Image 1 (cartoon, rainbow, N blue to C red):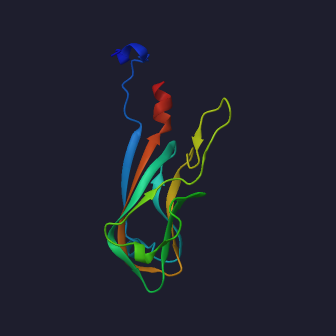
Image 2: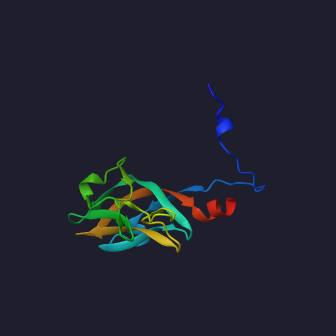
Image 3: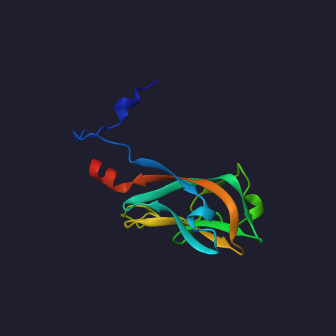
Length: 153
């Protein structure tokens, strides 16, 4: 078996390298935070210089409404989940947040995932059809700090 270290060039910069990855957890409590009405609401932040990698919504308290409410998680033009009906928002349900947009690139240029931001961005929820009357969820997002990677080179 070959020694893998002999095939990997190590770049020693003399700088301490800290992980560029971050996981952030947000509590979404629409009734108490004013985001229960129909429309689009900001519920989490993607800081300037970070790129969204993946995420999940974990329902911690079943959602209810006076009608047939739906929720959709998105950022900018990236629709993560499509419209999720209230009936699917029960305790323990997990919805993966992943970008439905393709990675774009220009020959000779770096790759950018749609949703990568050079300015601060938000993750939003759109409540459709009817206002929510109860329910809570945790939003877990994984980010990568592009500026930290660039500084480490």
